[in-house]
Every structure is written in structure tokens, then in C-alpha cells.
Length: 197
Image 1: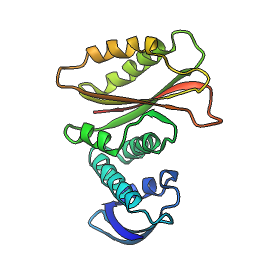
Image 2 (image 1 turned 120 degrees about the vertical axis):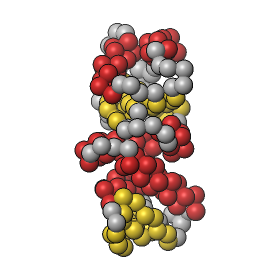
Image 3 (image 1 turned 90 degrees about the vertical axis):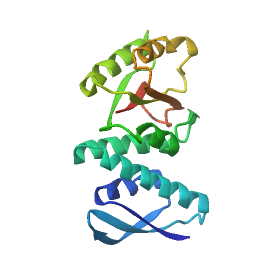
């Protein structure tokens, strides 16, 4: 299956990441800040081509909402980490991210980690998230994606600090969260990927 997509030139590095597995890209042309890519997939799946095109469109949206190349590199890496997870329990997809950040200003991304075995780990994590999020106020679009240890999964009882933080948001705020099990051989942590606007 062959197709092309046009993306901002700075998106190329993200599109060639492992998030796209067997998909390969060749640069056809660069013009007016965009790069035309020639894409081949080994799977031959129309759905995979459509998903790849949608991801390219999402990365273009993010590129237009990041102040610097460093912000874009970090945020797009975190977006691809969320999209590429194989062990999601509550998945966040391209449409979820696009819908969340379609309107509004700059998008920022960061991570917070705590030991998976620590007492009151969720309260400590949300406190760290709050501190980092302070730098980006005012914000009203948030995606929070948890990566948890398979041996120390999150429980519903632990979500109270998350609910308390959410209650501080304005009424028109958009908040989405998801959760996945850490990939095998990952550190024994509870990690949060935060995308904020």
C-alpha cells in the first residue's frame, strides 16, 4: 500500500519513531516548511494507513501549538508514547488527543514518576503534577495517562487525589485520563504522562 502525507518538516523525526513499527517513510520534497512523505507499509492495511495519516495530522496540530522545537520534540514524544502503548486498560487515541487540544493555546508535556510500592503514591504523584502544572497556568485542557506496574496496579480507592485536583478546574475544562500496564522490563514505577494546554 502506498500513500503520501504532508507534515511540518520538524515532524519527520517523530514519524520515524518506533510508534509506527513496520512503516517506513522516504522524503519526497520539502517546500514552505512542509515535507511530503512517501509511505510504504508491510501490512498493506488501509486501517493502518488511515491511522498513520491521522497521527501525522495530530502531530501537525501539536507542531502548530508548541512554542519551540524542544517543546515540540518533548510533547510529540509523549503523545507517541501514549498512542503506542500495547497494554492499555483505558486507551486514549488520536481522536481523544485531537479533540482535547483542537482549540486553545500552547500545548506542553511532562512526566512524573513515583515508586510503584510507595505509600500514598497517588497523592504524591498528583502533588508533583500540580507543582509542574503551575508553570502552565491558566490551563483548561488536560490529558493524564498513567503507566502502572503489573504487580502494583492502581485501585479505585487511590483516585481520590486525582478527583480533588480535577475539582479545581474551571467548569469548561476538558480532562481525559487513561491507564496502561508498564511494558515488560520497565522500572517498578507509577508514571504519569501529562499533556496540558
